[in-house]
Figure 1 (cartoon, one colour):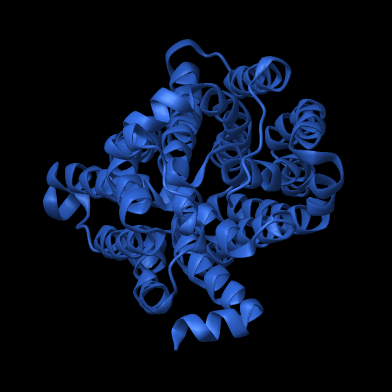
Figure 2 (cartoon, one colour):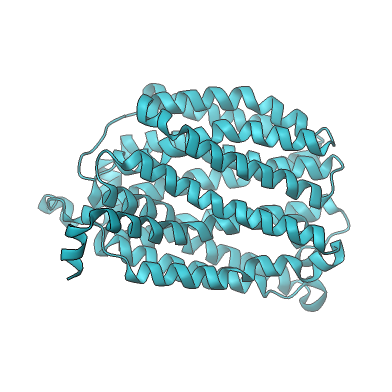
Length: 428
């Protein structure tokens, strides 16, 4: 009956697939937004230090920990997705992710638990990184395989916009709480509420993914016996090295762009005199600009293709970064908002081609694994942006770390666009 329903109602099936993918993917990016916007409050509650800058540095170091555990989770969950179905990987990921995020909201403060508080928080953050390791590649593969040729760009843009819509919701919720509650209340318990909201969000995602149908992309022709005998990771590394290196090049710019736009920009605002609530307002505006940019600029990818769209995005990042930096360090809220929105446009332009590239550059038999290995490598690099930039400032007084990170992302992307292995498979 389920198969007959899918054949008779392909549009309904695609919508259900997109809803199942977005629901869990949204939790990952909701938490990404919440962690960034409440970093100052978490720093005071869980990572106290005499110097607020050092406290904030410890929070971002804990943040980066999860991204270095992600590749491990990615290998496990991507293996599940490539060998046993996208649905199982997606369900397992959202179940673990929801449970750990809720637990983070229940960690006792430093005053109550001493050193156990930051240790437990970082451990949970690492477990969260494991849980989301296969989320991106599983969700993108799943939606692209349900969409089929001709609809992948539009589906990718909705997946990206939907997830950052969740980030926007998290940022709005954090901003609203910070405006209603005192700084003391936000530090004591307000930030915890934002993590505990994952309870209903996770329940919805778990139900949607439990009811979702399996990806039709798994019905592609069986690989040759030698490939079938390999683990997906072995197969990917043996047959997809060129496309993987190419994809990681464009993903690095996208991920660094996100880290600069949110974690990096947030730090600049806080260190140049803006209050935490003011910084949250600017972050929220940046998320809104990102969502709108993704939706409005998706047709550019449909018309120009992945490479030329990424080239345009790289040029936009190079042009917009000075605006972001000058506005973020101005100490003015209106300028900080303007800088974030301006920078969100080229970052939003890069989102759709990155999602589409993951779906189109790798064959279905190793798509989740190859995508997880490469995207997690990019996020691991990008996760260092806030902590390393703050560390350089604290240790040496150097204030242009964000510029160096942006230049790194641009250089890697340009290399990928010029000498990378670009191809499109036709089994999605």
